[in-house]
Image (cartoon, rainbow over all chains, first blue to last red; front, side, top):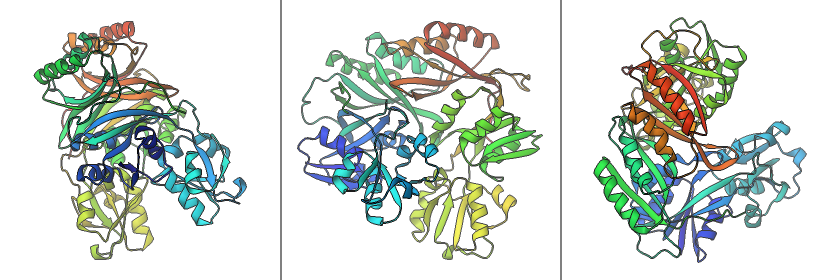
Length: 277
Length: 277
């Protein structure tokens, strides 16, 4: 199975892909997020794994926009515990390090480390694992911030482990397959639904849509809004809800279509039960 | 009046500050957003002006978090039409330009220009106007993307005007004063309220909160969610609603306090009526 991710081998997306697709064969590493979605839709990958939300940084807004813009569906989700580590080329010591490369979100989650080590300057990089590759290759007094699995993939030595500011740091990843509806049966119970909708800009329109879930006792776990390009101050709402009986998803969808100006289901899948460290 | 903004003279924030605070005396230019809020709370500025939302890029999530974290209130809003221009040092021609500096959001809003001019490489910079200062100063074959007012502030020549991909490009700015409640009377009618709340994670809890507005016929113009740091998968919701009678704001607040785990009003002010080009 060929799986597309944003980032390199040893990135958090790679770790999530290994968990979501145990039969992973070929990893398609993309530098930018739009390439991941194009790769999937073009048929150059059988699946894609993307982060959609981090418990500290919030939503990956670009990925919400890309979900809506491509014919695909969500087949599963996975919660990954995010731990950050300072990694450098073998032989480089902490005292020598002047620049630290990593993804901007990772840099922002290690503010205490930078406050305590003012000689280290944070430098934004497109990927955590790519930053380790660069630090190991460069021979300069630089280091990278990445997950411990990046060391196993790319060498380098771990100078400081666990430098994240907040240990309650989790990222939710989605497994995406091409096509707008599920072609294969889910392996677990279908108990979570993701969809996107928009409502007319008038008093009570959003409440009328959300009542469709509330009346059925369906718990909303997420509500994210994004602007509609070209229509200032209009929005689409992305929502996830927990499902009891699968019948409820179909009847909720029919009712939503009756009161929304736009509705698209993004996937029905098994809610991630526990968090993986 | 001393006004703090993120960015330099000639930035979009500066233009919005001139519109929101006609008596602007001293401009406090801050490189990073947290400095703007700290400057206001510390008393080094009398007011702050910050972008909160762009009609194409969406919310400025960092500013939502900072609004909640500081004792301040929203006193007014302003909608600014965003036009992007390619600006270089006098004498530099379009054919010579190899690097283009600007704020990452501005670079992302000029994708067509970069597709049509592959010899120009986009380079992220902390501020649009700061990018013009650098381009004019450097003497290298570089340019900047910024508003036309940056030329008036910093010199340079406009190589190409109006290079934004989408003309429906507006940014909503907020005027912030220190202290959690308004100390001075509003100059216009109070017809808009911003507040932040959180609800228990149970079916229907968000709908119960939003019904408080719907029952009064109050139109929600915005609903944004942000994670609660340290409590994975819990969220606060930022909402703006249009107000008829000011009494309704007080009664809605009382009722919200009865069904939410947390409520904080961020400001009552005059809705921006029209968009300024």
